Length: 613
Image (cartoon, rainbow, N blue to C red; front, side, top):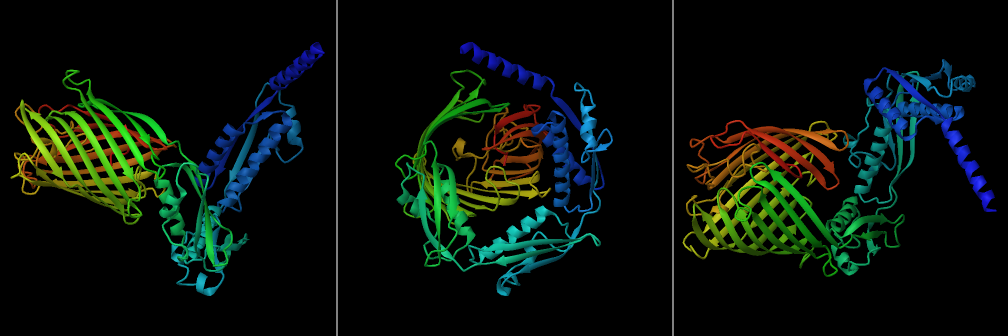
């Protein structure tokens, strides 16, 4: 029996090879006249089909593939409002709908490619002349429904994408008023070929007013669900709004302990008129090890690694141990190598919702042209989120340091109170395309070794993002920053607490800390004030790549208010590339100094993760 099995397998393999050897192939030539934008879209559509569903097989398979492509093109045209479009598809001058097309393919030698020819005339785009929204007048009428916020309006193309987007916007406005079960009972698009016009009608069924119901959690095995109940941003019985559902999702996602958070509102209200919500959670692996690499021309390479536990005691407490070695390849390996070790702990929702307690400790050896520093520090603080746009932190820090410049070493014992307020109106933290962000930092310090010289460091920074293209692919970004140490001078402030400018996050094209006052040997001195500004144009290219062009300007100054008569701000310009990943863009920038001084390098190279600002 074994010989029979082998014979059958060999025959099956032979038949398979025979079929593959005689498989026909085909290509498609597409010509589009009319709307240029539609021509580009159809070209992309056919290219994608060629990659995903290549025309190959026997004669019938080729013909069916060509017919399917023609139907996809017709559907795409109609979905964009081109209801008079003509699509002609032929093979050897025979329409693919005719039986003669199959014979034409059969007559082509199997070794030769079959050529399909598609001619598309888009014709005019039909436009909407009437947008009707039917339903209870107090809900679909003004001011209940604001039509000015709808994408679709008379005069717009009868584009299926616009129609569906408008349906979602109508439901969004109705649900915002508390009608959680609102639906569009009927959507109708009437086409008038004589006038090349369309009438669009939505019939809205709002359903009853709803209140927020009980939240049930499932799926997690590692996070305390009693604690998760405290993360719910509303009380049972509160008026329903979609924003509260979104806030629930955001608060759970922000914990960082779940791979997925699926919020599933019920399809019906309970007997109290409340909408129950089920949340299905997938736990994330609690422990993570990671590594990173960065590079700047003057500072050299830096490598770092970290270990994180995201759910230390079952209530999303995080502990992170990190280490970094920097200044690699710069100077003496043993004497000029910088390093640091740090421990960070965060306890979410300490005492109050949206208020995290933090603690940290660090030991560092920093090596810069301006100074070298050995220090140990610790800190505790509170991080409070008031709403999606406003956030504030306050804490206490202690630091014991030994700082050396010119062979002279100073010893410091500092107690600080760092405070920060953030107004974040940007649409993303890692890759914003619109909005703005304002950050105010204020830290008073008391030095126990020099009790007569307390000082305060203040800095305000603003960034803004303009979505030039409308789809987030072309963005104009700007940054401005000003810092000062009121009442202080560069002489009575620890060197590491002075302001410095220059480097990948400041003025690109100038070495880190070099854009400011210097000594006779071109070593940075730092200053009691700093001013910086940047303009950057960001352009996405394809799915994963991007390019930028930028101009940076700024300098540190000796006095508490920048004195431009000392010297003009340093100006750098350059270009960069971006590779976009799920966790943010990786960037490589090359900056060139426009008004460099003696000792400045001709360019700077910067490699890191994240946008420059």
